[in-house]
Length: 451
Image (cartoon, rainbow, N blue to C red):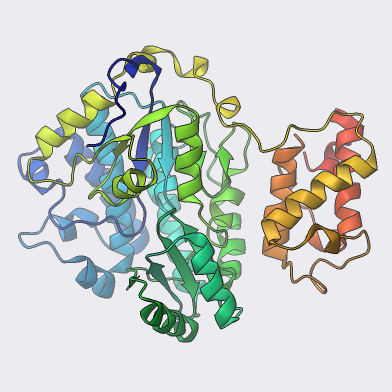
């Protein structure tokens, strides 16, 4: 592994990160040896998920992934895509438990797409049975609601180049779904995805169709998002025991977050994994361990930051040796500090300092304008008070919800309330007034400010 020259001397300063992989992190035979040897942790983890999955989906995960000749990823996607998602999730939770038994105490959890559910679960948000039920709800809703025929395509290029390809195709059914740094993923219907692959071929850009049963992180799943939020409202989260950073939200989860709404929002909101890794690296993270099968996320971290120390415990044949090595990497002196004492949000600075509570409207308007211009990649001058966000600029309700959430984070207003109607903020001027009401109103302006 690549290391910084002074890494050993400064090990006590390192933050350690447990990486929880998403949809594609299935490797035939992962944890099979431990299962066959009767490892209590692996057995208990899979059996608990089996019980929930059998009740809610009619399938057991272990019966598929631990059979004598486990199916390939392509075969599993074709025959049992629901089981594929459950296998990825359960393997990640089992790996985390195995590492914890060996003394691992990561400073931060970081999940990639579907991996955020495992990251939150292993941080204490839900017990395993509830988390498995949440995933089954997600699977059921997508099966019922998604008739798009969409899929996902990985491109071997950075975000800027991928965005140029998407802009060139100019099809609303194709969006940039994942920014991994050196790699991006576009999501959408079959026709524009085929066009994107053809353009990538002509430009000499590597591309791969992902093993995904749905066009995740795309507005095509808006109907599923609404239904999923309603179903997940019944699952009450507990306070997190470990900080969890979200590449979808661009911040740490907080106690009091509406996790049902946020997990549902994941279906239609892009993933910024590369920027999340870079933010944690800037905050002092130097050790990254992939808590799941394979080493896809570790490979991305290595490309982004060659100075990072990465370990993939389940990527090789000797899983016991891999787990021992990974647990050692996650056992730095910093991790002996109680979780409550580890700095969370302040470790990752906001691009611009939050405005004072006495900021006037003109100042607020300038700062909101800068945020919207950066997010939408429009010139700042187009954001006049009377410009229609959707009619004039194409900011749909999903993007507007995301932007309002970012404003809540940026100005300390909290998340928009569940009943907020984005249609009520159809002009840029109304958005500025929304922020001004919260900033100048303080705690008493909760309803107006989205607290």
